[in-house]
Image 1 (cartoon, one colour):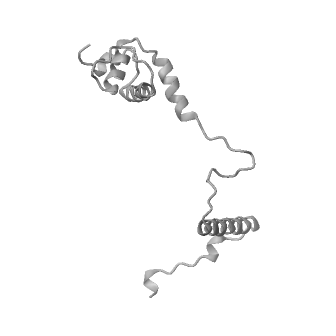
Image 2 (image 1 turned 120 degrees about the horizontal axis):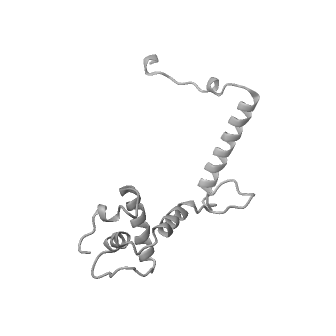
Image 3 (image 1 turned 180 degrees about the vertical axis):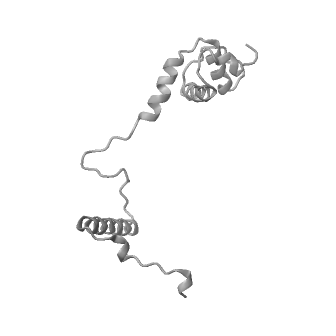
Length: 129
């Protein structure tokens, strides 16, 4: 296959958008050490991935599954953790975090009490100078 076109891949993928997603996943697989199912020659991995899809020798369903799974993986947190932020040793950042936490607690308490937070905020308009 000298040149791969979009029409060569249409029997195996539903759209050009999906073709891009699957080809990018296949390139990641090839970069990770997967063996190409077509002759690599001196082509770049993107061309190899497109040629693999167009040849029909590649399990497109498997590549589609890998693509979806790569975006489903989420970091696992312990039940006691509320955020995914990394703890810092910088005292200034700790002080800022404490101020933000106190502000959020104050706003939550105000909202729970039924008070209007907007009453505590005054905004000067440019016309009042």
